[in-house]
Length: 352
Image (cartoon, rainbow, N blue to C red; front, top):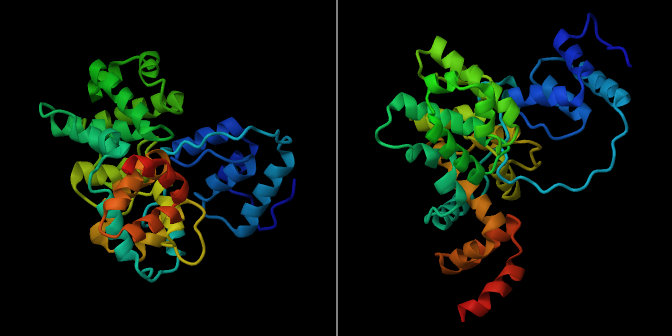
């Protein structure tokens, strides 16, 4: 291993990460709501981003991890989970302070308004099965505290999980009894069986039970009503907290960025001259120029748009053909990765 070329010892937290095995690192990342994809050195680097340290320290930790890591076997290409969540830094993070303030991209408003028009029908999966839709359909006989708690649980389940699977799991939980008192009384094995279809269900059992205990003991059975309070709960990251703050308390404190939002903002050139490498930096970039009055709409708008681009291409193309600016709409979806010529060829015979 390379010695750390700075005075004093490396912080214990960074030493701990370097000694961990990959499964342990992934658990730590999941606890922080961060992506678990990558090699060991990348996982360590992602964790170390949470701890202020010098560039030299970070470089040495990564080098040591790479030197001690076993050879990586060639892996089959995995199908991307397009509904996976990616956590982002809070607006007050010093990481975001280092992002330069960007000028609003030329023509962004007409592009944004066109996406709004294409999404006006609200027929994407997220519109009926996303966490916000599930909160709206929770039932009128439920108290606000119960509704807020279910919104939080739904978001905790949604990480690394498709909306359809999350919706089905929420139905099972509600049939079981999804309240603070009942979840605390539910054995871990039973809860695990109820949520076994979602990604990282073993970890989420622990996160949900521990977060529920904190809510009961420290917040009187109601979920925290601040970003800091929400992020103090195990398994709750900034992206989840931002959505809870808006849905449960009507407060917009930032733009919630997942993989869809991250990808589309890069494809449209909304993040500056240099593409951003992760959703955290994407959020910092777009918040530097987007009007705050639309922050609360961006996530649902772009998530649904991204879902349609990837799984409902022909439906989206039909909407493009009848919208207010057909050419601009087709150019837009092409920029966002849709093979327009190929899929138009499939639907045009049916349009005649």
